[in-house]
Length: 508
Image 1: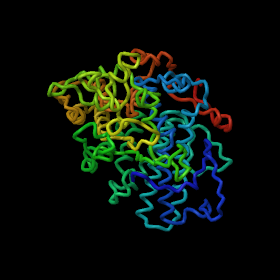
Image 2: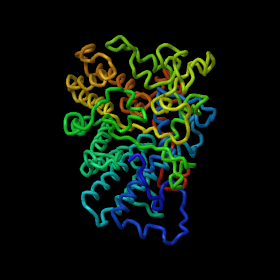
Image 3: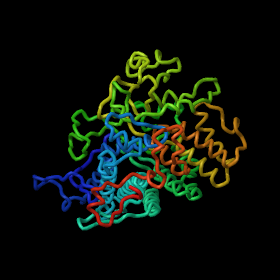
Image 4: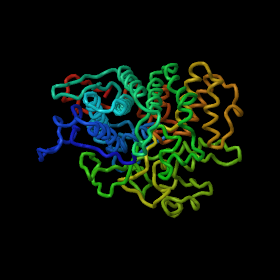
């Protein structure tokens, strides 16, 4: 499902406004005429996936997760953006790169709600109906997972909204419980795999289980996360997923949707594209502009990048005495090639010729979702898929849950698999018999190195209770971090002003 064909006339939003559509042709589909056939059901769920193409989700949200964490920074000349992405400064609560994340996730929720509300009454094959409903429940869980981890006490909207609806805040725990409920339903309804290549990229039972485990873990409920992870690692999922032999294959356009992919957002170039707004078909951007906004200066806008300290964390040599290959796969910097700036290529030029010894010569850019492996420029419609959940992430989550439930010995083999794929010696060989606390500290390092720049670091820090001004040792922006406030983003003030039942987040 590299490009999901969508029907766009049904998507309006009750919380956070979406562009209004004027229907000039009375023969065009509308809400009264739609939701009649199996084709309508499939087009409806395809529109839910299409929300992932919107710029606020495919660009700004991914940047927020990495750049607000201690591994990223923003030197953007757009100072309001740099402050919001990186420095915990956002006096304008309606600043669109942040407020748009709120809006677009609710657009996705509204689209999923329409599927959930209307598909059950369609006369169609029951297995296909269940499959479509499972996708809608899964994707609603995805959008709420974004909202609860970024904005906290967000309103739960579980039905297609009416104009008179003014939902109030739900607690974070209530939102997580709804996410888990949705994902449990999804896991019951979704297939393990799809038989048709046209369904490539659709969510599966394994994707639902993986996100369910994440939700439980954010609640600190490690015992409850175990069954989902056991299904993926020791049950039926073990025959579906595995690690790729080559780590970098997880980030190349030539090796998308590989055996390590648990949930992957599908992107494709559309040469007719001129907008991030996915109601402007056929001019909708099916690609991602993330690469354009995060590529090095001279290529992209460089609005977000990595901090240099993380490079030095890859200090353990492989069993062959070489540098960890994940450094080169993950970052563009003066020594992406271990032989230095004269040997490191950056979009067709050496690092030395591009940056010399000037102020940009020590900068580090996250490479994983760039396109330097196949072209010498970036653009606003990158076809490079976003790997939302990889099997390596699942293995490390499983190890964390086993350790947290007093089974540290059983956790070792899953970390060993991830390390050995990178060529590192097994943890069970170099650090056997770690205590529960020491194993967790080691696991924090393993997740940092394996998943850097993929959008997981912020939630990891939240789960471990590690957010705070102490992180300013590595990331000076955390000197601005106010405990009890900056764990969450501000709810857009436009929504607070329009909804008498909606309260702003604490201290904002």
